[in-house]
Length: 157
Image: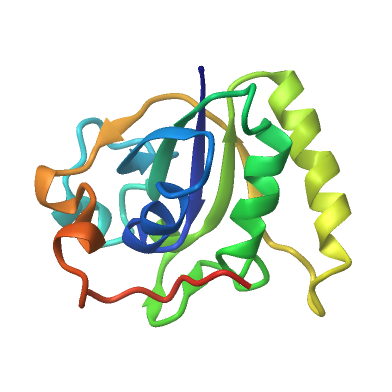
């Protein structure tokens, strides 16, 4: 089992699409990439913590490679908009891959090069070293499963 940390805008939509992918075992939403310890949603939504709304994906590498997970990540959000997905605007909605080691960083760089030709504008996805994960509040976990009419700007492209 391997874990990846990705940010592609509002975490509800990213989680909803990835939780159903073959090889994905567990998804959780939370916060990473900032400097505020133990942030809450009310902290992160201000954009002042440096954290992104992110998803933690545990997956079976024998069924889904890290590279293929990243390819899917680039199909479910618009990586050409800076700090924005749909109506969600701010650094907390940035497109980011949080790498855990140099192998992941290198793989992410390769996938960014590979998929950049599919977009008309330059990719603005940041590569950031993973440092600490904070789980979002319980009501955010599997939010769109619990609230099927809830807001999302994510879809398979």
